[in-house]
Amino acid sequence: MVDVSLRDFLTSDRLLLALVLFAGIAGSGVARRLFGEAGFDTVGQVVFIMGYGGMVVVLWYGWLRHIDIRGPEDRDSPDTVENSKLYERESEQAEQSR
Figure 1 (cartoon, rainbow, N blue to C red):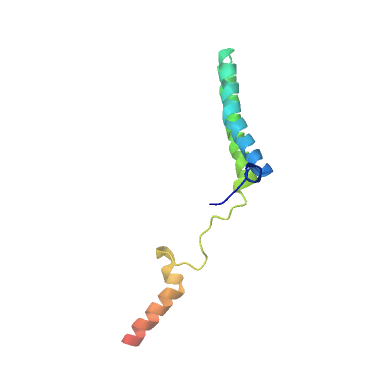
Figure 2: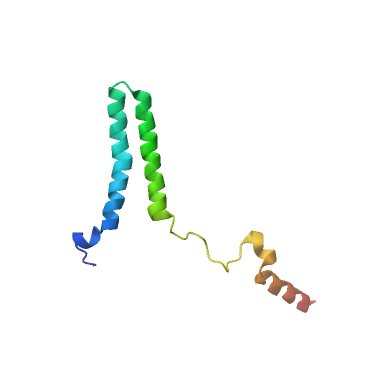
C-alpha cells in the first residue's frame, strides 16, 4: 500500500482546483438563491449561469487545455484504410497470389 500523507496529497494545484469547483458550483448556487429570495430572480439566474460558465472556462483553460487527448498517429481506422500501409501490403499480397 502506498503511504501518502495529507500534505503530499493536497498540493497547491489541487487546492486551487477544489476552490474553483467549490466557488463555481456552491458559490454561484448560494448567490442565485440569495438573489431569488430578495426578489431578483432574473439576476440570480444570470449570476448562476455566469458563475458556473466561468468555472467551466477556468477549468478548461487551467487544467484541461493542456491535455493531449488525440489517439495514436500510426493507427489504422476503417475510414482511412485505403491510405494506410496496411492497404498497400494487402494489395501487394493479392497481386502476388494471382
